[in-house]
Amino acid sequence: MAQLNYAVREFGPRLNNSEGGERVMEKIEDSDIGPLWAEHYPKRNQSFASETVCLMLMHIVNNRARSIIPYGDWSDKLHHVLQLFGVPHHQFIEFENEPKRV
Image 1 (tube, rainbow, N blue to C red):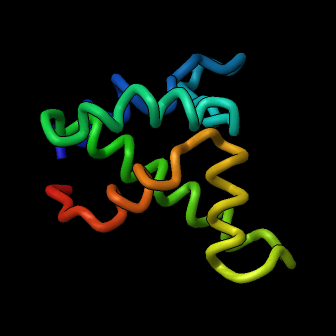
Image 2: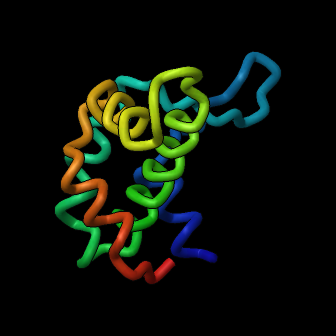
C-alpha cells in the first residue's frame, strides 16, 4: 500500500491546502491525461508507480468511453476518447492486455 500512496503522491493528483486548511486533491483535467500517459507509459515495466498511473488513466479512459451516448459501438467510443486525450490506440490496447503487478 505504501507504494500506491507514493505513486499517487508523486505522480498522480496533487494535494493543495484549501481555504479551511484541509488537504484537497486536485482534479485530473482532460488535458493532463495525454501528457501523463506519454510520461509514464514508457516506464511502466520498470516502475511500479508508472504502472499504477497508467492503470488509473486506463480506468479514466474506459469510464469516459462508456459515458459517450450515442457514439457508435465500443470500438468507436474508445477510439474517440483516446483521440480526445491524445493517447495512442496501440499503446492503450497493449497496456490493457498486459499482465499487471498492481
